[in-house]
Image (spheres, rainbow, N blue to C red):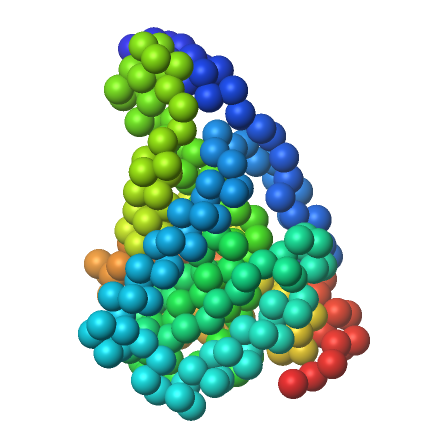
Length: 270
Ligand SMILES: [Zn+2]
């Protein structure tokens, strides 16, 4: 059965004809060098993410829950912009992405950055965790790193591949990537599917470097993720429950703080 499934997966990949293996980012001081495989294009994922983000804003505005806390919004935008000013260290195209930064008024502890730089912070995260600016930079650096590394594109590629396997589409028709399929997968990955452990660790390390370059004390990443772990009930949202276990995460961050310390020392402080 497994071999049969693998055969279909290979057929699906062949039919798509676009299985590319690349590294989306420069390794940086933290040395991220994992090669990535994609079945869908960056453009398709960014376009789907842009549409999904616009719909989230439209729906949120209809309910009156977008950006109605001006002080909180200004703070989130100021910290985000300092981090965005550093993304060129990892990929030259990212500074010119059409970045958007908004705050949704909801008690949930959550935040994300969609493909192409679409940032959303939920007010519940700020209200409940009361992060310092540096702790906020740790969160935002982590979410921005997911976008720079195109982790959603990786997940969508897996999802599309699995759907092709399940439906046998690849064998029957040599299916092309349906826009609807990709859009659905992007929304699903952003709102309900957690990233894998490997992606989380990459986002932690790259986020750490972004915050250090932006002039935020990297040790705040440790305290932020401790706060997050304490606030997360055992059956919390999926994006929290599969984040790396807090002790292992703190140890990894500590090890990488040493690597980014010189960048922090040399950075302009906020
Ligand atoms: Zn994450």
